Length: 255
Length: 67
Image (cartoon, rainbow over all chains, first blue to last red; front, side, top):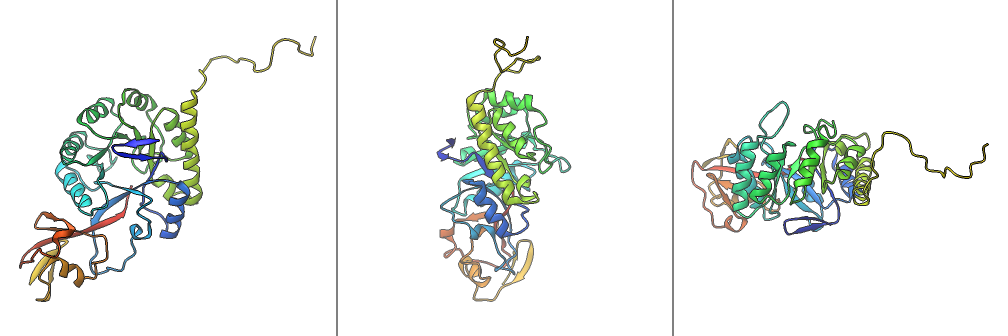
C-alpha cells in the first residue's frame, strides 16, 4: 500500500497524461496501467472551441486521484499560482511542484522548488515536489513537510533510465516519506530497477505514451513495478565475484 | 464591455455581466474550468455573484494532458 498524505493507493504506478496518439489509446493505456493517480497540466483554455475534447471528461473521476503539476512555472510564485488554480477546480488537493530551472535539460530549480513547496504546504496542499537526485535537497523537502519526494531518474522525456542509482539509493535510505521516481524512465527494466532500489512508486509518462504500443507498455510497466517491488521486499541475494554451484558437489556421476 | 480573456482583448455583449454568464456565453458552464479575475482565483461558488467590469483581466484555464 502506497500512502501519500491522507491517501492510500494499491498501485505504485502514477501515470502522466501527455502526448498520447489519441484519447482511445490513452484510455486503454490508463486502464492497462491499473493506476490510481493521473497527472495533468493546467493551461489556458481555447474559449472559442468549447467543444474540443478533453481527456479529463472521458474519465470516471471516482476511480482516480488527480495530481496536477505546475509545469510551465519557472519561479515559486508561478508554481503557487498554478497550484491554487488547480485546487480551485474543486477536484484535487495534491500538487506536483515542478519549477523548471533550465529549459534545455528541464532540470528543476531547487531554490524555487523549496520556496513553492513551503508556501503550498502552509496552504494545506498535499505536496509532491519534482526534484533532481540531490540527496540533501530531498531531505530538506521532507523536513519542510512534503508528503512525498519525487527525484528524477534522468531528464524529463529522455528515457535514459536511472543515471545515478547511488544518489537514488541514498535518497531512499534516508527517506521518511514516499520516494517516487519521476521522469526519465524509459523501459520496464528502468521501472523495475527503481522499485528494486526501494522506491515507493514510479511516475512516468513518455515511456508509455511514446511506446510503439502504449497499451502494451502500460501493462508492462504495471508488471515491472509490481515485480520490482516484490523483489525489493524479498531481498535480493548478495553479489559475489566468483561462481557458486547451485547443484551439490557430492555424488557426481564422474570419476 | 471589453475584457481581456487569456491575454486576448474580447468584446462581450451587454448581457454578459457576471462570471457565470460569461461561462454560459462561451458554452463552458458544463466544463471543468477555473476562472481567475484580475489575479484573484474564483471558487466555483463565486461565479454567479461575481460581477464583470470593463477592462477586467480574466484567465480561464483547464486541465490538459501532462506528466
